Image 1: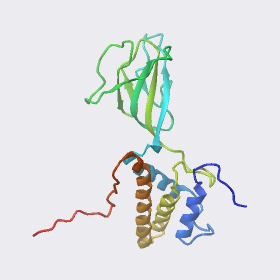
Image 2 (image 1 turned 90 degrees about the horizontal axis):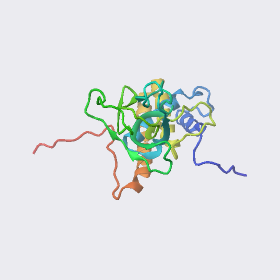
Image 3 (image 1 turned 90 degrees about the vertical axis):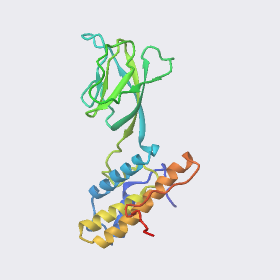
Image 4 (image 1 turned 180 degrees about the vertical axis):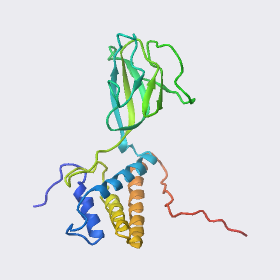
Length: 235
């Protein structure tokens, strides 16, 4: 009796089995580990992020309390601050704020400071108002009351370690399997096979991107392949 999947995510082993079949190692005698799969996984995440696919977007609320010594909230949210950035945060996209005690209020968008240099030298007020992303941290002016910051950010998916680990990108088995096989073939010096597999991987990635972005637009699009070169015709 077939096993009914309990989630829409495939498993790491599905992509690994496809990659092994493509490099003629179905028994897993040579190709047995996951580093190449994780390299393909990271590459797929970059492709999706560059095409604004929302599967890699996360949102989290962070509460900033007033420091009794300074009379204001922290001036940064980073990997070492308290509270700190979400562990899976690659970079923030948008920030909103709300006074923490006012749980019935709506979150108000904060303005991203993009003029270069350091953050404006302003005195803390009731709200944070501005933010900037620099040196892998969110820099703030500070506020004189506790503020809850809602951060929408691009996330990094956890590494695939076990064969049963879920691939947290739906319908990604072909894209990952072909890309992983291309990396394996190149590592063995089979450059022609690697190039062929890479082309199939890119097609699978483009199809996956199209499936994600099609509901968000009225006209389909297809990204130019890496091998595409604009031709100049001289008359």
